[in-house]
Image 1 (cartoon, protein in one colour):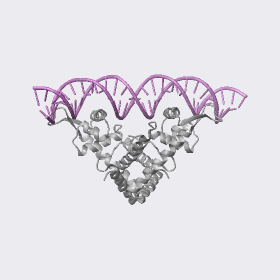
Image 2 (spheres, chains in turn brown, cyan, yellow, orange):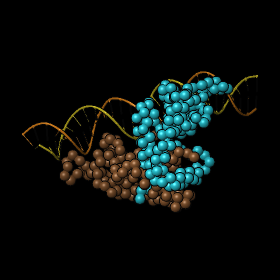
Image 3 (cartoon, protein in one colour):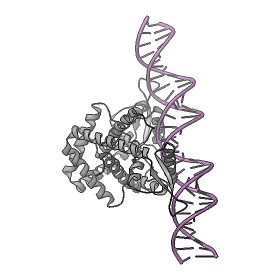
Image 4 (tube, protein in one colour):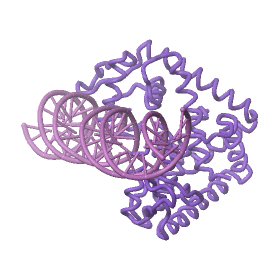
Length: 149
Length: 149
DNA sequence: CCAAAGTAGTCAACCAGGTTGTCCAAACAT
DNA sequence: ATGTTTGGACAACCTGGTTGACTACTTTGG
């Protein structure tokens, strides 16, 4: 049997590929996984580029590049920070929120299909098991998002 | 609860980070995950650089770069192909086999610890569940290894 | 048997997504 | 008031991949 690490990598890749395929059929800009993480983060948080970078685990410069793209494509806008004249809030546009909604549906479809393929109870065990593992490894501080190759 | 994709990504990252940390303490060359996949593949297969690239899911040129590094560091050597004068077999040196043995111990330690943290039965369910999922998605052809960010 | 097509490997140019380093203007802590 | 920290932008660079071109060798089909 493959080591669990392999299985994690291959499964992540497998489900991600399917997501990407379905997204491509719809024909949007070539959004990458990182963009999805940005949207999901912006949805619940009012943040600056620096904070976004910390969340993604990249430098503020790298985060700024991503924000630039998303801005050009109309998924986010920058708003002046109310009290700090240096800073800007990055927020989702309607287009951004629409995309996120679509993506979330897609993800939950795929998760549903995974449940049908391997059994909903098995899927549930996987999710609680991995959650517990992350809790065990990271305690209460945020785990790294980005897989490293 | 986080979507299963997130959990896969974060868990892969979490266990990979631990592996990397422990490896660093031993103080070898800065081997990356890809190198590990190479070693594991070379262990059971007599292959050329082209075949290695196919297995990794990268171009032959990219595979050649990796082989070059590993050759310089003494983990692999190139041998002339017995019948095809263009081709070369890439094989593990003793140093390469030793590294692989070490890495495998490390991985199984980490898997063991994961089992202790979340329960061996849960871990077993995760492994069989993910294996079944991969079977479902890819049938009998080889799944992509490399996580994409 | 030989010509045409295909393949292993190398070299070179390029690209994408990060990094570090530097700077400015604004904010914060004495 | 001043010295230090911080958000953001700009630039140079690094790494791990890509595509394209080319050579030497192999394979295939008439």
